[in-house]
Length: 444
Image 1 (tube, one colour):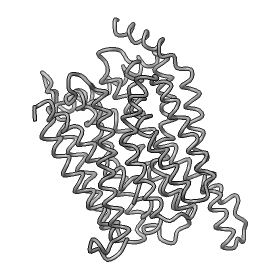
Image 2 (spheres, helix red, strand yellow; image 1 turned 45 degrees about the vertical axis):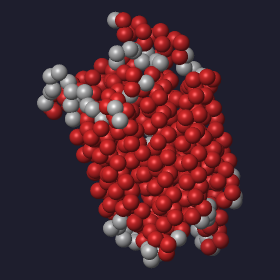
Image 3 (cartoon, rainbow, N blue to C red; image 1 turned 90 degrees about the vertical axis):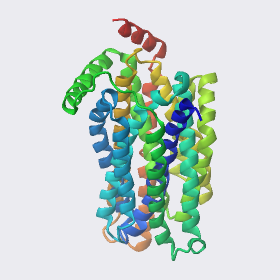
Image 4 (spheres, one colour; image 1 turned 45 degrees about the horizontal axis):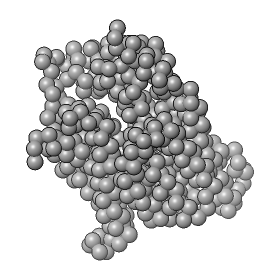
C-alpha cells in the first residue's frame, strides 16, 4: 500500500472506529438502558427530560470548547496526539458505563456526557487531518468515503451487539442486561483499536515555526474574532450558517432521541434497536448516492430534499402507532442523514474565501457542536411540561399512560420548528452572490 493510500485509509478508519460510539451508545443502547435500567421506575417523561438535558449539557460544553480546540488544530503540530487523547477519554468513559449499576442515572449521564466530550473533541482534530489524508486534493470524495465507512463500521459492530442482546445465550452471556453492558466494552475496544490506524498511518503537516500552547490559545481567539467580523460582512455565509444551525439541530435531535421516543410510546426496545440497524446499512450506500445527486442535481436542491424528508419523518413520527412504521422511518432516516450532512459541508465550501478554509470551517464546526443543544432540551422540556399541564390531580394508571404518550408525541412534533425555520432561512441564501463576496474578500 502506497503512502497516499495508507494515509487515506488511516483517516477513513477513524470514522469506522468512532461510529461505533455514535451508533451503539448515542443512538442505540444508551437511551434504552438509561430509561429501563439506570432510570428504573422513573416516569417516562421525566427520564426523557433527564436524557434530553444531559445531551444538551454535553453538547454545550463541547461547543464552548470548540473554538479553542479548533485554533490548536489549525495552528498547532499535535493534532494526532490531541485526537488520540480525546478519543481515549471517550474510550475510558465507554468502558466505565459497564460499571454503572441499576438506578444510578446520575453516574450514567455524567459518564455519558464526558464520553461525548471525548468523542466530539476528537472529531475536531480528525477533521483537521483531512487535507493530509485526501489524495490529489479530493477532499469531498474522501469526506464522503469517511461518512460511508462510518455507517458500515458502526453498523457491523452494532449488528453483533444486537445479536448479543437478542440471543445472549449463544454468546455465553447470562441475560440481555449483561449483554448491553458488555456491548459498551466492545465499543471501547473497537474505537480504541481502529483509532491506532489513524495515529500510525495519517501524516501530519508540521508548522514551520511551532508555537507554545499559550501563544496558540491567544492566536486562536484572535483568529475567531477576526473570522466573526468577516462573517458579519458576508451576508450569505451568515444566513447559511443560521439556516444550517436550525435544520442540523433537528437532525441531531432525531438521531439522539428517536429510541427514547419510541420507548415512551411503548414500543419494544428490540424493535427500536433493529430499526437503528436498518438505518446504518441504508446509510452506507445512501451517503454515496446523495453525493452523486448533489453533483448532478445540485447541492441546494439536494439539501432541500433532505430537509423535506426530515420534516416528513418528524411529522409521521409524531403520529405513528405501530412498530412497522418505525421501520419505514428508519429507512427514510438512513436515506437522508448522511446526505444532508455531507452536502451542507460541500455547499459551505463554495461560500468561503479561498485560502481561509481552515478558520471558516473551524467556525462551521463550532456551530455544528452548538446544533445539538436546543433540540434535545426542547423535546425533553416540552414533554415534561405538557404532561404536567394535561395530567389531572388524581389520575389513574390508564390516564397516566395516555397522557404520557400524548406528551411524547407533542415533544417530537416540537422539533418540526427547526426544519421549518431552517428551510425558510436557506431559501434566502444566494450562493452566486455569496461566491462573489468570497472572491472579493480573498482579493483584499
